[in-house]
Length: 247
Image: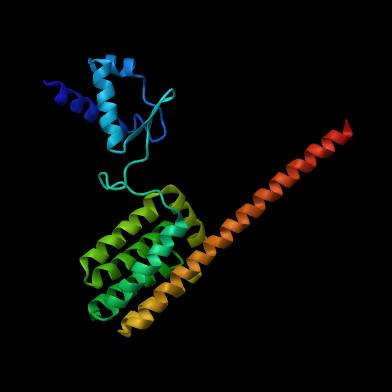
C-alpha cells in the first residue's frame, strides 16, 4: 500500500472509532506512539492521518496539549448542529407557519380527518406524556406532508430530529409540554380549525401563536431556574455565615 493510501486508511480507522463513540467529542486521542502501535504503522503516518482529519473538521490538534475530538461537522453523515431550544423554536415559527399556510390551500377532507384524529388522540386525558408527544409529532409532520413542498417537508423533519435528538432541546421541550398540556391541545385545535376552513392566513397565525407561547414558556422556565439557583446559593452562603459566627 502506498504511503498516501496508508495514511488515508488510518484516518478512516480513527474516524470509525470516533463515530462508534470510543473517542467521543471533547475527548483526547491517544498519543501518536500509542496509535502507531495500535495500527502497526509509523508515527509519521499517524501524524498525516490526524492532519487529514483536522482538515475535515473532526479533530483539533493543539500543540503541547494533544489531539482532541471536535463535535461532528454539521454536514457529516446527517449529524445535527448544537443549537438551543430557543434557536430551534424561532426557526420552527418561520418554517412551520408557512407550511401551515401552504397546507391550508390544498388540504383534502381525508387529510382534515387525519388531523382531527391526531388532535383528539393528543387531547385524550388517558394518553401518556410520551403518547401525546408522539401524536404532536405526527400532527406537525402531517402538515409538512400536506403542504406539498418536499423541501419544506424535509426541513421540518430535520427540525423534529433536532427537537427529539438533541438532549438540551429535548429536555426544554419536555418540561414546557409537561406543564402546559392543556394549552398545547387548544393551540393544535386552533391550527386544525384554520386548516379545516382552508384559510392560509389564519393557519399561519395559529401556528405562530403556538410557537410564541412555547417560546414564552421556555423563557419563564429559564428565569425560574435562574432564580432557584440564586436562592440556593444565597441559602448556602447564609449557612456558611451562620456556621462561622458560631465558632
